Amino acid sequence: MRVASGLAGLLLALVVTACQSTPLTIPSAPVGPDEQQLGVGEGSSTGIMLFQFIPINQNDRFINAYREALAQSGGTRLTDITVTERWFWAYILNGYIFHVKGTGVVEKSK
Image (cartoon, rainbow, N blue to C red; front, side, top):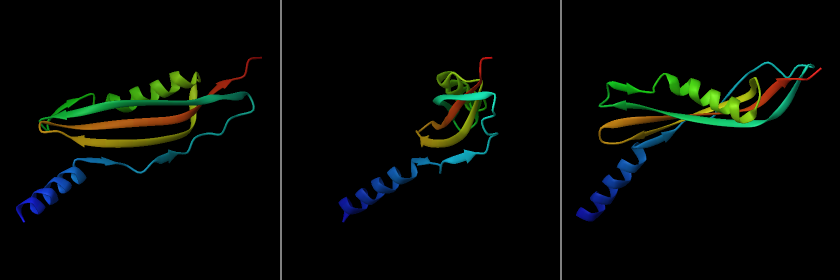
């Protein structure tokens, strides 16, 4: 009985220590006649809440992930943007991983 309750506690701990959001697609302006699609870019950034009150990279993680995806695509803006976020827990901190994926777009050369 003791082993079963220990395994149940371990299973519960594993279930509540990490989560992932449902992907969210953000509407964006369609590709214009003077633009061309380059390719898909992805970026991610992690923020941490240390001791539940010391934020580390919490606000910048959104910007950093977007900029990384934009740089990887080679575009000047992204379309078809999808964002997800994963959370994890450790004894002294909570971590939040923000992920951005989108198609890079750039103006056509004239």
